[in-house]
Length: 92
Image: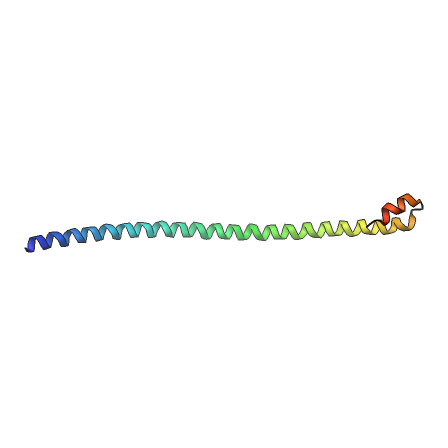
């Protein structure tokens, strides 16, 4: 009877060790994936900051060009004497 109990306990212990080893391996895999995810997140945040800066600079440059064009249009309104050209300049 004790032999059977010992065999069953041994099988259960062996199965538990197998499950423990599987859990340890999965834990290592998840830890590695977490490290990769954190690295990817940092790279994403850096790229996002750079894109925001580029967007801000581009917006500023476009706005400057538009202000210059609006200024030239206003000056053109005062200088143009042909009525057909004045019509095109004054259309907004």
